[in-house]
Length: 243
Image (cartoon, rainbow, N blue to C red; front, side, top):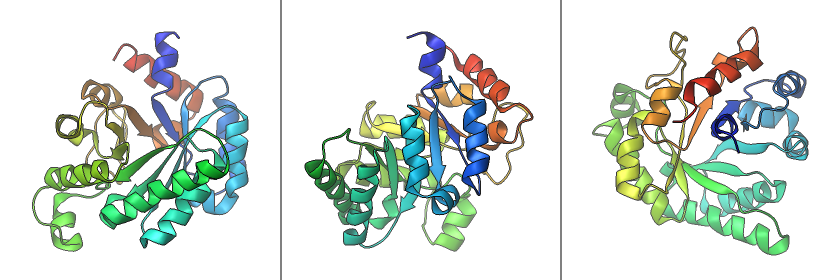
């Protein structure tokens, strides 16, 4: 596999659209680039499981970003249903606690007992990249630094059997030091140099994030809102080759 293909497989394009038709147009424009595709709440609630199945039929790796956070039995059932869809990765909120995250893994195992298929990577959401320390301390009610909260959740997710976490690129080094280099990190809050940071508070460029050691980066608007999304993605891939 050439370096550019290896880089492409570590870039997740966020399909943050309201309708399947819009997302399908972007997917067509990226045809032939083996990037990961991230399906979030708005698109999944609009287009449903059929859209995810379509992406899988086209050969894409899919990260279903629904951030489940509920009582353990409900999350167990949700994880079972998601696993049956054949997604490659999905997430739950680490704030739901160890028992809830363990229940998610039980749901995965139950689905795989009923039908053979690949085991998805399950990751825990630590702190959203839009969350500043002031918001975390004063509104969410968690004391201390954002980094300390992220590390605490990462340890909890690993203890529950999850394979990794979602975190900002700023926390990747400490997560890898604390949980092991093989513990997967998925990092949103990625903005190419000169791009508008939008509603993100903790950001890095793609080059900086991979230099920190992250496994996957998530990029949405700098690609999806670009005049030429394919060219935007190709430029990002070129910028991180060899990292």
